[in-house]
Image 1 (spheres, one colour):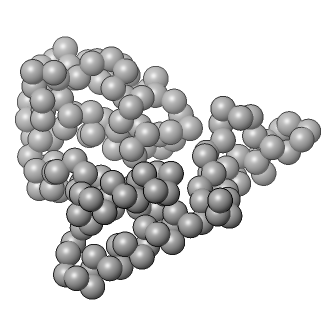
Image 2 (cartoon, rainbow, N blue to C red):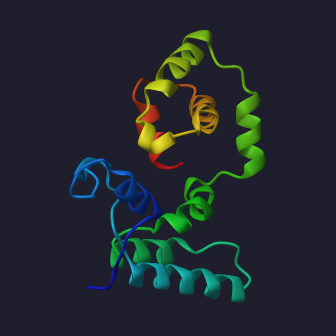
Amino acid sequence: VGRMMRSPVEDVEASDSPESSGSPKRSDQAPEEVAEAHEAWQLAMEEAQVEGNESLGKVAVERLLLGHGGMPLKYRHRMWPQLLHISSSEFEKLLEVQLPNKVNEQIDADVPRTRNSLVAGRHTELRRVLHALGAHRPEIGYAQGMNQLAAVFL
């Protein structure tokens, strides 16, 4: 087992905690990340760039996810477009799609209800993601609770 690293969120919460023990409540803690996972992801990303690839292959991603207990936060934002198979321009086009009023109303109601520790100050970004999701799969649209799932990826 590799060295465990505390996330920056966990460090801030621990220092701001009013509890006498000085540590945050278990439910508010970010998961600890293994240093070996960071090193493995960094090496894989560097190798892909040397080979002229903008992203990692499916097999490499699966191997990293399974072999190192997940994806460190640092790499999630770089990897989501690849994993979701959507480009920035495609995302922007989805934001231009007119959604039914009922869908917009549900998104507007759910965004403020989203767990604040996941989206503090990022409601506009979450609203954009939910709008694009509703536009991408109109047969599904948006359903109450998708905000909680999407917030994890921001």
